[in-house]
Image 1 (cartoon, rainbow, N blue to C red):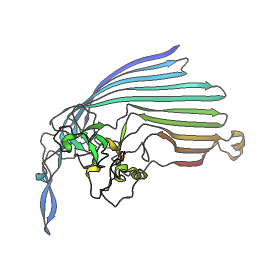
Image 2: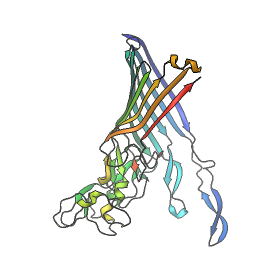
Image 3: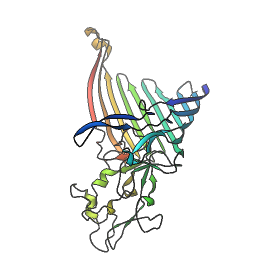
Image 4: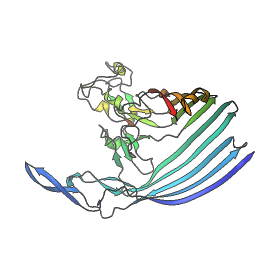
Length: 377
């Protein structure tokens, strides 16, 4: 039985003015050179820079069923961003490596579903809220045919991430790791251009940090004075670049780091079959940036649990109090994931749109358990 049905649509343009003030002007600042003070260029002029613009079309449906015991919202959107604002590589002979510019156009298309249900509404009350989202991101055009690198500089290729036409924003960049040569113990990488040299020309998009879908589910149950709330969140289909593992499996590039237990499986003599190259001091070839350290970042996490009890009013009225609630809450209690790192939900360059999903010695989210008393007069 349908109680309510609403169809809505919207269209709009929004601008992003996140440009440093006076970016169109060349600026100068105080500096020192050989012990003498003076002035030097502090910023390059860019008279063509302008706002980033996003055009969005959104179509949604709200529906209420079974005397409003089931409510659902479905939304489909299409966002087209033009004059995308990011740092564009610049000739380092000028003293600058990048300049903020309008580098191209990008598209985001997706669908979002949210459902809330009243499962029980008697003495025992049980409500469920569920949401799931899918976003498809793609860089449509770039003003320059050359890819834009971002993230961290790595051996073997220019960087950990790339902005490339036809690919999601900030895709992972690296070599295709083919295993370890049983005869020599050296890593083997795919030579894309067949020139016999492994370098950035053999780099490729090896994955991206954007999930195929993500969401969460919350169940709230109450009985008399007791209440329980349980929240799970999840992500599926995203990749994580485990640079922490790369540092702790460095194939002898440096002796300053301790090594992971997996290092015991390294190649040691001709004929050894393993995926861990030989350890040789100052060897960087065996630690080139590749899909060797790219892992599945999918997870299911028990994000929050809260248990509370409201003391009956008859017991607190003599204290002239209207409510006393005792509660215990916990976060990050349990996680199901194949990721080898400490936490699949973290990103070292937090907030970056061009280099997501990198784990480089990032502290995991802490597990907390706390309790308290809420008193209302």
